[in-house]
Image 1: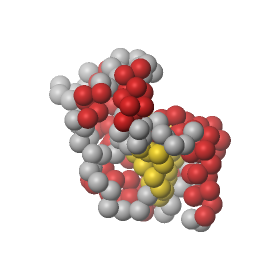
Image 2: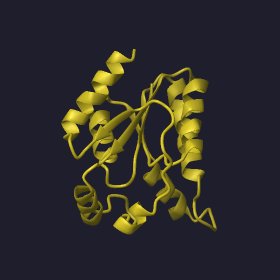
Image 3: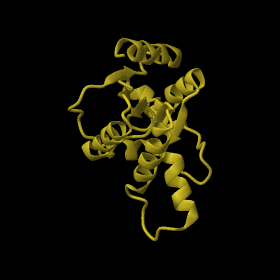
Length: 168
């Protein structure tokens, strides 16, 4: 199974995804970590672009083929990246569960972004202005939407778990 957590920075997707990983023992792929490793390697002369997603797609595919459940933590802002996750799941013969994480309370969302501590060495946390200006296309396909302004991380994990069981 491929579970892809998507949403803008500061919505709580990493908190929920990590809690689900602990509960399930799934493999965890975080795009921010992959992108920072690419930057730190010095292999690219320009911005990493979509290279982090391409690496994660390949890692997810190889682990899905081994029978692992893979949880991906990413912004996943455009239809192209969402389509790529669908193709990975299809190629591996795995179920795809898309989970969009939002924070409908603008003040809380801003507080989270502004107080966020960098947990990836070398990566500068986003600013509120960068979050507001972030490209993020509307979803066309079905997904589970979790509002972390209304839901605790524990409740969110329960929602995802119930969704996984109900969609089998």
